[in-house]
Image (cartoon, rainbow, N blue to C red; front, side, top):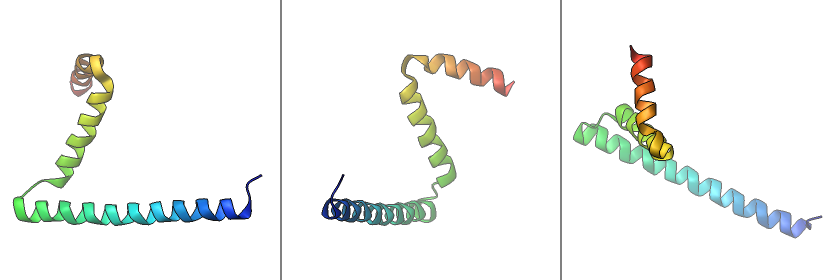
Length: 75
């Protein structure tokens, strides 16, 4: 069983990480807004493209097959 001290230390570390993640999310929003307003970037399209790129990287050799399936679905 973990001691009271260990649990408190863990909670402090996790809380710190959550706070840092919140700050990073806020910074990300600011950057996206800056590029959307200042450079005309379509943020919605960018986010979709990033999701697709992540999926494609996980697919590896199956990318062609997935593309073919998408064509079938779009028909």
